[in-house]
Amino acid sequence: MSVQHTPPDTGPPQDTAGLTGEAHRWLAAARASAAAREAGWELRFAEAGRRCGTAHADPARVLLLAAARPDAATVTRLYRQGTAAERRAVLLALEQLDTDPAHGVPLVEDALRTNDTTLIAAALGPYAARHLDAHPWRHAVLKCLFTGVPVTRVAGLAARARGDAELARMLTAHAAERTAAHREIPAGLPHVLALTQEQ
Image (cartoon, rainbow, N blue to C red):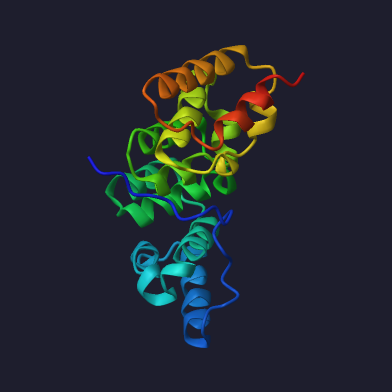
């Protein structure tokens, strides 16, 4: 399966300040619809890319989710049935929605099993930093390194990596494997390894 590569790290999705007047009006109406839980708000969630443009679709969808405050079943359905872009927005919104880890963590873990680097990056936001167990979190950091997701996209990296001997072991083993195969060591690996040495 091919890997979709993430563009250079630009941090969280841009806000909606650059929207056209028409798109701003659409988003305001969509947020009101979502807040009122009107029947069509999920359709507006789906069409945000067309209405707001690709550059603003993520923050627009997150705003709609924040306004709607959907229950866990709806969040799960929007993720499972959504396009990659819609799934990404759900992942980005999990922290704001304060989703129960019993429902949110499986979505994060599902995204981390994919080879879509935009989903991997979205999955490793503040929600994962708070709720993802140590073992899958360590493997997620390694996955970032070998898929090219900048480790700066891993929320809470310094705090969680600090003093993590097991992560240090995994990183050292990965670096040794790459060296033995005459392959380049991922750029972020020395940085993360240095973090594990901090106390």
